[in-house]
Length: 321
Image 1 (tube, rainbow, N blue to C red):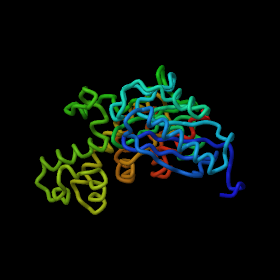
Image 2 (cartoon, helix red, strand yellow):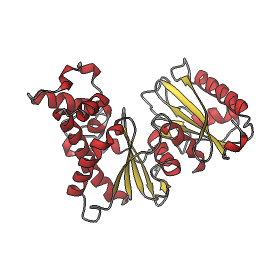
Image 3 (cartoon, helix red, strand yellow):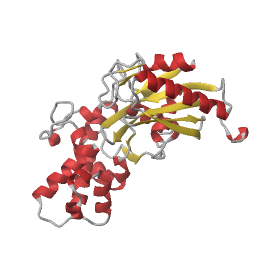
Image 4 (cartoon, rainbow, N blue to C red):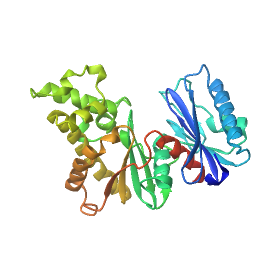
């Protein structure tokens, strides 16, 4: 890559997932200069940190960016931005707490910042994506879990330990019959996560005699993508599943709006690929439910970040905050 195609400063973005850890060198306008990955499931956290540091160093050397990296940003589950530690992350293979910032800084000598993945998504949207130019918005991350990143007056709301915005674990009457993995009933996560949508699919198929291509899918192979594809092909039950999910998101968003008065609510993540079928009922339910101050005053948007790189770009933007 020629030097004149780069836009300093540069950062390293790291997306720490339960299976793989993906990382990239990113310039100031969101261009990914190089990307690599390592397995997350290593024998110890020390093995993982050693391997990640080695591969990041090799990437910096290859790109000839030694001394030009302004910081490393890591998006991780249950990340405490204040202490630099990961706390009680159930989908990681090592015991918590994990002093991740200290481990990376001691190995690489580069300023390192961590945040939970939803907060990283919000900062990524503000820096490179749909929220560019916005100062008040909520990102709802829809994937294996449901999370939220809240930006108010241009500042990320992080809270005492960096856990602000756990909107997936706010409870609602429309989910009162569903038990969440956190141990409570009624969490938004039980409706709008990937498993939540599959739960709704099983429920709708059980209570209806209508024909549906979803009946041909084994229970363990059901995914939101398959529900979406069926809905796009005209399957009425699949359409009802996404309509129900969107309306629940809209009712939840009406409550979120009362807390932060956002300009926009942005859907982010794998489940958000169904945004064209989720957002219309979401907007309608929001306007039916929201306090009059917010009706027709909030935009509903889909992330503009490339699906494959959104988490990395979000993490890479953290050192700028």
